[in-house]
Image (spheres, rainbow, N blue to C red):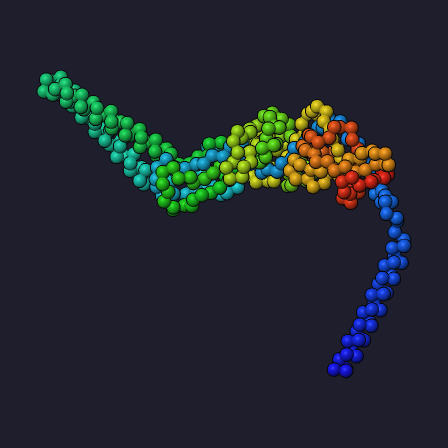
Length: 360
């Protein structure tokens, strides 16, 4: 018990000494603080004036290069592929034979239809002779004529199918995709090759947001840069705009016509599109550095306000629009004659005293 009492007493003494030291230190530090009621030092900031400017809006998008038309080629009838004479990426000429079906079944169908057509023609000739001798009736003669016409139509259909048992290039272009191989059995109308028609030129397909699609019109000019040809700029023209959004992405497709201009184009090249619109009416703009807490079309800025004892920073919510270079359009929240803080705003609070150093 005695040992315990002495240990506790010793800790009481230690805590008392520490408390007195802390109190003395606090009193010494407090002697340097300004008296109650003395205003805090003003925070230095740099500012910029809200100005009226006629912004020239620009639009940027990324797309891919492709022939102007893609044609899916198939056989008219089902059958076994005898040969495919081209490979993916190969250039083809109009009328060039690309693929064909095995001819045995096709030729047999044509031969059968031709033989039947010849037989019905002979039957009709005999029927006419019998009708002239009053042996056959008019009804029998009419039936023979109908049979002849049906057989002739079947022959034309067989010959048509035989003609489309071959796939020929419909125009100059490039084989974009090869979807089947020789000896495969394909159904009627099943795509075998996809050919890009380069005779109609090349296009760039790019996706735009709803805010951008309404700013573009068919015929607008654009500048295109291709990663495959660094440093080279290709002129392009807007040729087509989607009237409905893609249900998967919510974006709108824009197509631009572009010329190779002496270089070799291939499908799938990445294209960077830039368009510059005409200057619009004057709008209020501020440097982008002035924006705080920007979220979509909403943001916050600090404006400088005067009072009797100096200047203060006032927090103002604004509605913003286009971003062009280092300036942003202000659609609401400012009168247009304020000064906004461009440097030091992140350290401010609403109503805080400031000292303006100059333009930001």
